[in-house]
Image 1 (cartoon, rainbow, N blue to C red):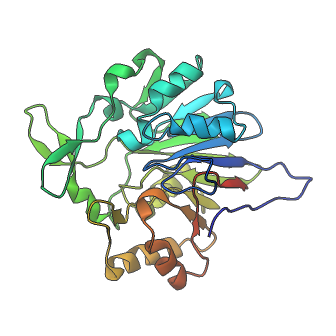
Image 2 (cartoon, rainbow, N blue to C red; image 1 turned 60 degrees about the vertical axis):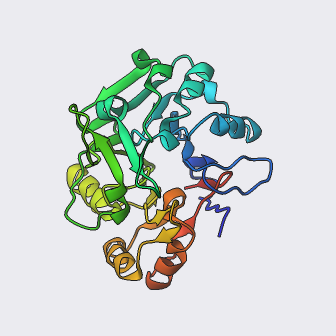
Length: 292
């Protein structure tokens, strides 16, 4: 189902999106890894959304002809290593771009339960990050008319059940289920086309879309790009069909929205959900390029 390419007419300016890193790859010369990274070029700026677990996103960028040194803004979706482990590498390549994130993304201590139920640290290596170049936000931020960052999502609808194995450490050292207050999403609106970028949608993709529509006053989003967190890569189990059906109903309620997913969504859920939706869910991978 990948790579994907949708084009506007030559008279229209397209937003260009390149997947620098995902669990799978479109090209054997591009390294896949458990993680996510997108390079986004609009008419006025270039944006890096997430940076994968290590330097692979940067190696892939070089192979794809993407100059990360010219990135204007970087955005971190949440404080897990598979999205922010490459921050030190990016800061070495680019000496000017701020990295926008919630304070909780870098200050929180995050863990995951593995097969033996032992917690393993999955947060950021904060000692390796130049925090003076991070811009911390605690609420929604409109960087411009066409660029908005949304935080603090409603949790009324579908929440991935895999969240129960993702933990946050309290000040007393106790591990509790992470509520993902450190998660954010990026909304870009250019030439009338709206695109929402999420990392793993730990807050629930339907909840995130509803929150963005409510806060911005928009009546729809044209494209949504990000993981749905429906797959446990340790047990290799996808959420049951009955649970996927709940998310299908939520996403289908946005009839004009096209979805692109990968990473934590897993190998099986996209095909199952596509069979039940009017519009199929597109799958991206390392090397996928989109023009929207």
